[in-house]
Length: 507
Image (cartoon, rainbow, N blue to C red; front, side):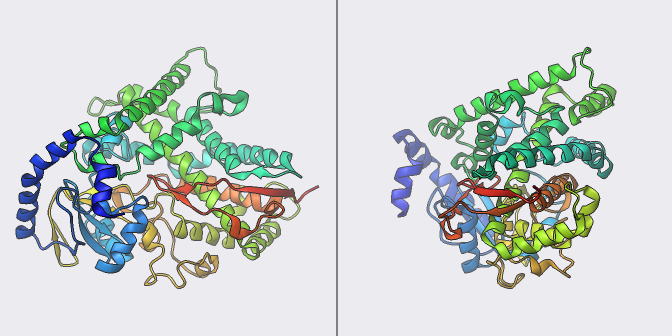
């Protein structure tokens, strides 16, 4: 689409916007000229007045940014509206951003949608760097997501995997919508561990509109909404309808969390010895010191972090993984042979079996490499001037790490477009934030604190699915018929659902 067509279709919904932007033109250009005179910035593609490089992002920014990197290098400077931006697309540059300059780049930009959904960015993911963020991150790491805490919920994972298997088995010999089944599994695990009960029984999942809430959340936090790059013009959110969508989505989440907290604070509620993450947060709130008192809104922000982020990333990883395995039956058979050899005739995979499933773990790494749930990491913002690869980058610059591109970098990976778990056999590269070729959870201070939690939920489910069923596509459907189109957002899943035939392995 030509630039003028793009402007007409997307950027000038009214003459008012055009007038105000024109008035602001001199300010933006003079600001850009001062920046060019003062700093040796990374290379940049040509810009348009006012919008800068925004028109070059397209509908799939991770792909557009990869093409820019191929032409201008692994570190580029973009002017996205009012926002000076640096994008890195290689393991070496990611290491500079996430390790060498980790502290200087540990803050978050105040994104409009995040402020409205996360109670003024008081959650872990979007909170700006400072004492409050350090406090709540410490709570998450030590109290909510520690190895000991994750292990204490093993019975929940075991029960929900069994329920997933039962749901799938009921569909045979007919087809099953595996995407929907995996979504229910991810939701039920998170709801039980975070909220204390599942919401799929009795139709609550559909009644409360969980899936629609999560989809709206994912789209609204996509990170490349036009208004996010013109913070001085918040009226854009009203004109393009984003503000009303944000208010509606926030209201639904907020009302839901009010109900959950009311249930937890009910003195007549007998939950036995089981403590979900809200119980733990309420105890922390009750016994907290006065330096960083957690308000009810703070609790809700953290709950939304756990609930929305954990559900989406687990579901996406399993859905992409099963899609790749069904497309490549030889890899599927090898993985099944490994699981069935380790588990034997026992029908249930135990978490104690997982360390012996080396090939399956290699498959999960390969899923993360080709299909990272968050293709472009949540942006960071520089708190001071930094020098990276000889380039001078000023404070208040927004940084994006394109992990989708890094996973396909031919410098780091042989045959990067091929799904080949063998590359991780006898290979020490892992996804825990120390190897910058593979960064599905990010790295450094802003790395995802839920790596242990997320990995446990994914590994057990995938192993059990491989053990319990023999998989094939419906009659008349070939692997080449599957729609692999991605839906870009803060996380990224396939648009099409995976419809399969799952034949129980145990009669």
